[in-house]
Length: 329
Image (cartoon, rainbow, N blue to C red; front, top):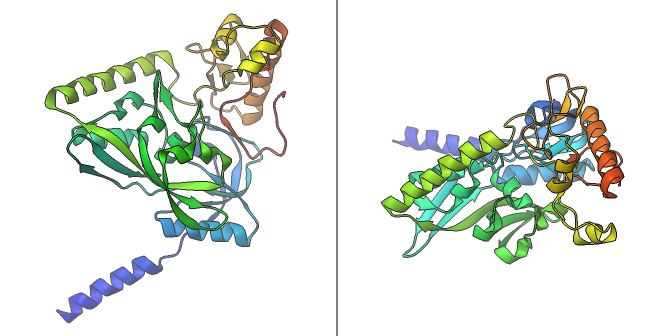
């Protein structure tokens, strides 16, 4: 009996004292959807909150810039790579508690939206199926406040646990802390790291769950038919602000309206970086394409849009590792 107790204690001790592995010069091309970009000077995949704290301590000790990389679906990484430490959280635990009229579902930052929706559907929980087939981790989804038609994921957030990068302190926050907006949240300031979040959802009857499954499957079918599903970053350019539109005497802020008028979908290609034939605001790559090719393509689109409408579209995706802004301001 004592032998078994000792063995268990040894296992627990080994888990508690396991150090975080930090790797050097890790290529990032296979860790983002564009499949381009250079290497990270340092890279790690924390499995626990303690691991993330260790990674931040390492960054502070070595005066390194920190970048949190989720699924890599909404980023463009420089061909020069990232001269700091890239942290990809791998905490994926999901759990839930049923109440009388709602369900609280807690998901760690490294869980994917796909995994979260699958978990909910298996447990008769509805609400998040609207975000089916959006490639994002929970952390990335909240950072960008992902949406589909009128639904924003921030609408479902009840509370979250975050880590303050400057102090390494864990803070519990409510939904209003995030200041959710169009394609944005307070997490974009990069002063905090999401650890986990709790969503307030609905328990579904058998019929409601069947309808939710139907919506889920139809959304996936629609997304596959309307958008490219690989080697892209989703929508590349953000919508214009009202001020930008008013100053140029244009009428709509919707960037897709202007890109459609340029007739670039399926017609613009620079060294394999091309505008998808499925959508004018989705740039995609072929094998052999690099980030500079994507930048050249984006600049060409900016020039075309300015010549025709007096507007210069700006990127919605995150630019990572660039020494200076690579596009036209």
